[in-house]
View 1 (cartoon, rainbow, N blue to C red):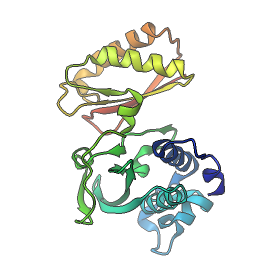
View 2 (tube, helix red, strand yellow):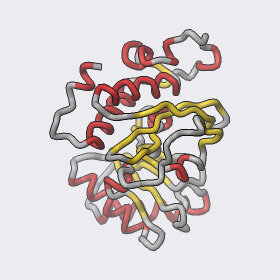
View 3 (cartoon, rainbow, N blue to C red):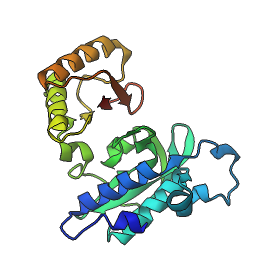
Length: 236
């Protein structure tokens, strides 16, 4: 934990501290896929499993993230519910006086770190998170500190997917990174993970890489879920 907190300084905004801790956690820990056979006493359910054993389930991710945020002076709470057909736990975090949902477990996609569920609002989280408790939790009505809004990857209804992807890949190149993430507004007609647009999306990406003068030997596309509005592109 000292390693994570040592990355922070007083010049960093609350958002910058939050995402630094989130990314440190996700890059450090692996999901414990044998969760069905774990005893209730397993460290996979607590912060120790993340910070020491580096293997955990959603409860461990959430409790470790809450502990790290507390050390950084950021308020957060634990949220329980279900997602993808299983009981689930994640966090709500207060940034600049507004509350957001953060699901570090689902953001940790193994080789690719995603931010699909980073500072999202109630309407967005409820798409694939159900039975959310506690009932008296804070309202999350804002996207002001959402990852995609902050990083230019949010594509509004009337904006071109082709232009947005080209600009996003160019931004990644300028930052000397090889990953770009995008989120379509809920009313945007395009759907990234829909098989019916697979060929169209490949052509859009081909042109986007060419426009940004990015020469790669291959790329990987990670979708949040099937028929999704969010995706991450990583390239060599």
